[in-house]
Amino acid sequence: MRTEDGPAGTEDAGAAGAAGAAGGPAGMDVFEALYTTRAMRRVKPDPIPEEVQRSILDAAVRAPSGGNVQSWRFLLVDDLAVKERLGPLYRDALGRLFEGHYRPMREKAEAEGDTRTLNVLKSAKHLADHFEGYPLLLFAFVRNDPSGGSIFPSVWSAQLAARAHGVGSALTSVLGIFHAEETLRVLGVPEGKGWTLACTVTFGYPTGRWGVAPRRPAHEVSYRNRWGQDVGFEVPEPLWRQEG
Image 1: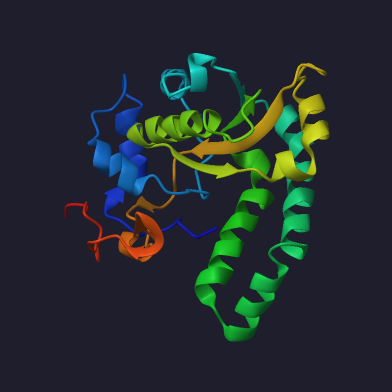
Image 2: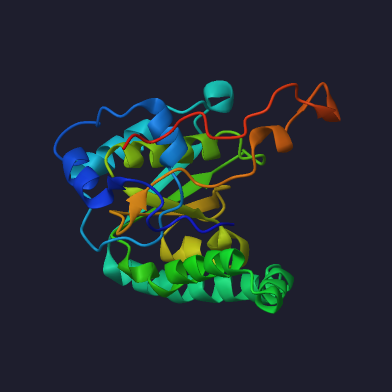
């Protein structure tokens, strides 16, 4: 989990959004999309145009699918009444996560004054506090895909397409972990058909700027031929850099 909102880059998110929404898929360099599609949780309430939504879903269904079975379903939510039923469930789910799995990390960060980690948690809480305010939500459902090997590439494709239109996104899975049955009922998902909620993605035009997220270098987390064995090269800095 990480904090990724704010002035990390040089491109104005609002201007990019306006340009991307003007027509079909925006002509963005693939590496720019890959390097700058970070979790963007602070967004404007502006609606996402239908042509952008079409592009997001069309990109999602072009992703690799194991056996080409395409056992996925995507449900878009922009109805405030539906979001108002889901918001309390989401906040309860995140609260459970914070008091459970994330509690040691939070307490350690508070004790040590680790502002980076505390900002990460603050960003996650912002999503929960403003859940109903996101102009568009995508719920990704899957069947017979226990590894997520098909659904998550498709969701990532949706997020990359959104990025090409200047739309920020953030993926979260806590609803499926803590309130799966309630969420499926609210969304009218058929019972007994094997559909499970893989994740939820929020979409919106960012209030901040795009940029490359700080990460541990690839050579520090990669091996070759055997666990722990040097990968054979170093990548001390991002290989793609934003101009300007």
